[in-house]
Image (cartoon, rainbow, N blue to C red; front, side):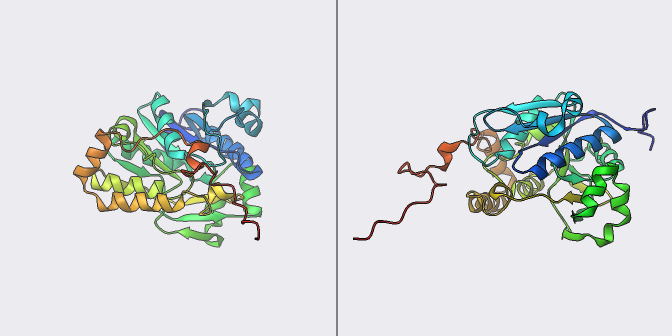
Length: 294
């Protein structure tokens, strides 16, 4: 509570909150608007929203001019696919941040603002990766999603928390706090991961093998439900390869991972439609027509 400012918000002026965004449904745009409103209401921090898609930005339409003007924005062009390259985007956002602490914050998650302060303080004290929650990951649906939009408060969610479906007891995703320089020095996010799946698991496993702490603070995390196109599910074409990269990292020791980092093997260019084309040039996302009958 000592971190509160005169306006009642929590002082996180040493932190940039990184929100990767893809407007793949109306739910996502709604959730971004509510999450940005929630963060601006409760904390004084820099908000940096990132997109990795060709074409005009979807942020102004999702947020409206008032909220959009209170955020920074990074728009990477060149990804002409319906799939995100979240790890690549996060690393460019980390590089663009101008504060000593950075915090990944997915578009659809809510935690009590006090938990942000606790996580930031642990990073200040030397924590490698600090989750601003205890691992409990609850799904919020229906009326309670709408209630959050009206209140922009975690307090009602805390009250009715036992009613919600528990997705994960020891979740590695949603939000994580880092010392910016320490994150970059230890490889950032692994850009071999494309679309959805396992990038959060990988950075936990890698940090442990590199001798960095992975810590949690008290309190749960809430996930606002949203539509799930292929980009947000196991139906994306990169899911199996993501799992294989996680297995590779889990089988490596700290020395091998440091060599990967030094050689830049955790970096790759931004995803594009060229990555969806097999060697014969047929687009992998197009279904081949069956041969004509003889």
